[in-house]
Amino acid sequence: MENLTLKQMAIPMIKAIDSFNYLLKSHHRRVAVAAYYIGKELQLDQDELLRLVISAGLHDIGALSVHEKNSLVKEDVSDPDPHCIMGYRMLSSFSAFKEVSRIIRHHHVKFNASPENAETDIPFQSHILHFADRLDIYISKDEFILNQKQAVTEKLRQRAGNTLHPEVFEAFLKASKGDIFWIEINNLSIDKLFSKLDFTLDYQLKTENIVEFAITISRIIDFRSRFTAAHSYTVGNIAMELGKDFGLSDEKCIKLLIAGLLHDIGKIGIDPGLIEKNGKLTENEFNLIKLHPYYTGQILGELHSSEWFREIIHWVERHHEKNNGTGYPYALNDDQLDLEGKLLSFSDVIAALTEERPYRSGQPINLAMTIIEEQLAPYISLEIFEKIAPHKTEIANIVKQCQQQMSREYSLPIQNI
Image (cartoon, rainbow, N blue to C red):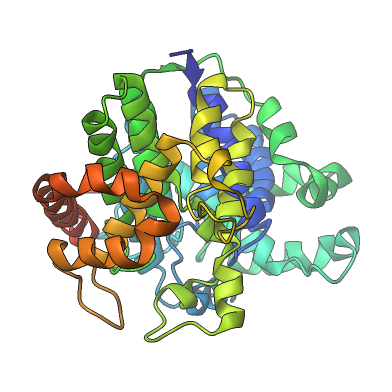
């Protein structure tokens, strides 16, 4: 495979996640810009500054619901731990994001916190991120930003030395003296922001790192609900195994694993309440859900510089197409669909049927395969299904292992962070 770097993977994903985020559009970008300027004023080294900006670009990914989102835009977040801990869980398994996950875990740290939250246990970048986060909350999106400089600064001054770190406040005063600080909060793109950072510390990603990164990204969607906590992980592992059963190359099988892990990332643009609805979706609600493969294609399309990813993008944006042109979003016909994409589609429906949902229990493999044969396979490929069916025992084992592993990780207590 071609060489991919963390920069090539992380920047497009952060950019796309912020652009499509149903809950907090542009908030991450704005906080990242403010954090960058303050971090520069504090003379963070390049590595510290890079981690700070990445943390700011992802800091609220653990906010799983509209209710949590609404609480985050208040002056004081009454219970920040759930989304801080969930953000940590989503990111901590990716080795390159170990320190990033710790910064996010503590990004609502209060300067006057109780002694058990010792200063030495908390990354200093968490204080900067907390400050930049609150700064953005104070800025009204309905008023010209330069007209708010004094009012916002005074609000922050009242909290400096109390909930906000005084050293960070002093750095903010210096960084925000010029209008450019405020103008770029509203206007600087993620691409331009990252171009200001030194990526000499960037490193080449091997295949196992890309899988690790894909697992991390999949959690941003799947961990929004206990019902879907294992979904993408299960889809990816089934797809990889089916690829082996069909004699595909090792590289194709790894690509199928990654495609499965990333196939639902577009759901970040969908109301999470629809995912946990206890009952059948209305036609209008289903029409909203139907946007997610398009969003997935758009998000992963940000990796356009990578030839290696083009097949993966091709498969994931077609995983809800049907062979008779009635699928979505492109209404493709059978001759426009390939084997790998169909294997991904089968993996998706197998995983979905065998998982618990708010309105039903997970189906045993025999019943799931019967439902697929009778209701779904005719619209994907009966010929391919006939070759999949004899492997139902090994598929059931994969489903069980994936669900058990992700259930443990979703429920894992946070200790010694």
